[in-house]
Image (cartoon, rainbow, N blue to C red; front, side, top):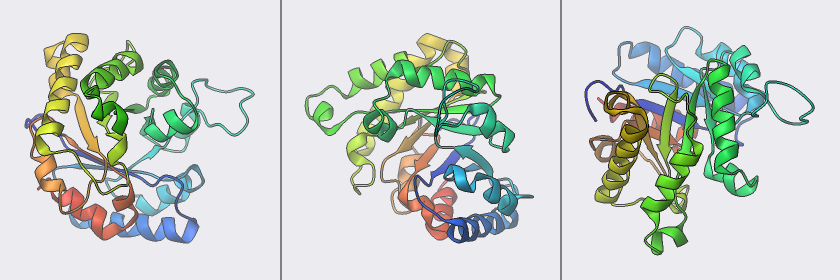
Length: 254
């Protein structure tokens, strides 16, 4: 990772956590963050929508940012059960995850859907974490780079820039499985993503935009992953649900 890009360690809690659990986890992380003032990384937690406000109280006064796990592409309207980017911003969020593989698969979201959601995030003043990644079948067929290039091209809004966009590469077959690609594979994919961004945004802008790795990031593999040139932190799932393991992952940036 180049010096100009500050690592981002993002925790995606997914559909986990009731009030007591969420507050305990957020408070434990806030204590560590306050005690480590000046640490050379940014920390983000994305709790379920029900916990965003309470988590905000728990992390107040710490450098920990909050984000949403998804948003609708419209600012408001008759969309029962959805939440807008403006609502997330109103709750104090600074980021929102869009295009996670679980949304793409379970809710049949297309690249165009993801691009529209990312654009809505920009309009609300949020940074969009745009997720891309291949399935195991696509990987076995040797299509990883084609899939990643296609998803990136289709999901990235025209207004994307280093200041409002983070890309998260998550090989779907590695999420929650304990499996990870080889370091060479991660480095190759991230390098291709950086190159595609350079073609789209220009070399200077692409050099500043953060690209995260996700997919079974753990304390015992984070340091070697984050040491790769084009890996600028991680989007962490299961390991973000325990303060000790999540903080240990963040400390891998030190």
